[in-house]
Structures are given as C-alpha cells and as structure tokens.
Length: 286
Image (tube, rainbow, N blue to C red; front, side):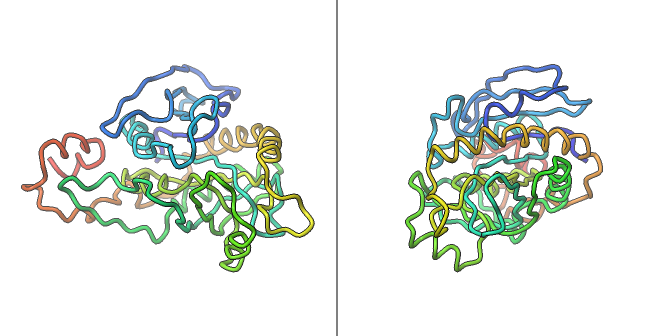
C-alpha cells in the first residue's frame, strides 16, 4: 500500500487544492544534488513529495538531469511510489495533442546517462521486462479518465537523448517500430526507480505530432509550452484523483525488485559502497 507518493515533473504541479503541511526540503545524496529542493505535503492524509525534474525555471537539459540523485533523494525521504509527469510527442494519429497517455513500455535511445546505482564493488541485475508498475498504471489511468480528457492506456514510450528534436527520418523510423509517444526524460528514471524498489508509472502529456505528420506543424518549443500550459490543470487533477484512490492499488512486486538481484558476495562489497547505498540495499546487505 502506498504510504508516500512522489511526483516528478514541472514545479507547478504541487499547487493543488487540498495540499496541507507544505515544507521545502534540501536533500543531499552520494550522487550529487537532485534537480532542486523537494516540496512535501499531505493530501487527505497521504504524504506527497514534488520534485521539478528540470529545476525551477527549467534550467537543466534532459541529458544533464541527475536522475540518480533525484531517485535517491526521494527514496531517502521514504517515497515508495512515483508518478512521472512528462511532455511527449505523439507518434500515432489517434493520440492527439492534449491527450493523456499512460505507457507500459519503454525503448531506450539515450546516450551515456548513468543508469544504475550499482558498480563500485557491487553488481545487481534486475528484471525490467515490465518497466512500469502495472498496478499503479491502472490507478493512474483511472484518475486520468476522471478528468474527461482522452486517455490512452498502454503502448510504448521511446526515450531519445535530445536536446534536439528528431530528424524527419528518425521520426519515420520510430513510427515503423510502432511506438506511441516520444520523449527525453523517462530513461533512466524508470530503471533507477526499479532499482530503488519504488513503484513507477508515467503520465505523459501529448503536446505535438513530432515531425512525421504531413499536415500538422513540426514540433516546436513554442507549441510544446502552449500545450503544456493548457495541460497543467489536467495533470494536477489526475494526480489528485490518483492520490485519493491509490490506497486501492493492487499488490505488486516492485518493493522486492532487489530480493534476488544482488549477485556480489556481501563480504567483498566495500564499506563505503554499502554506506552510500544503504537506503536502497540496506534491507538485504548490512
């Protein structure tokens, strides 16, 4: 059962009706600083934490986001569930700008982003066949449907490196792979959440048709920002509805993802590595 819900997305998401006991917290991690201070509060008794992925004022490139610090910081606060709110381009005609998408799968096209907490004397191999918590995704989809907005549950999010948008050739290639949406931020975020044994799902806000569409304008920053401003209220309402019903989430295995994944003999793991990773591996390695 979710005890502490984390939200990663724009800094305006925590400005929602009914959020009480609001605090702003600085968190340091062995992997450096997270994107910004974390805002915590409660919504009808549920603890919540909000972290702006790109920092307040949107000053951090997708490839510069310290994903390890972000997930580690939330984990160290006690967050056990994360909703990732992300702008995406639509790769299918029926996913229109303004629609909400709850993807179930990812394809990783990023380059050189640190994507694991492990190394430095400890090895772990986690299952990632189903990269989102499907129980959380179902609750999130229900919250999205309650807004009256067009919702697409399932499908594949392809994560590109950026910060440039796709070439037309790339966009058409990804279309041939039958992906549903394209973005720049959910990998390695989802991988790290799984390593941290945190339930994770994405609320993707479709803002454009990338550059594959023959009759729609190509993706632009102006178009994305305009669409995002329209969708912020929808995103807040989806989060609110999800928070109110998340107590009904079915049991899942996310909280035991590391149970059989660490293959290194505990006796040879450096003490400093054990200390750094204590919030993540502490219940398995002393």
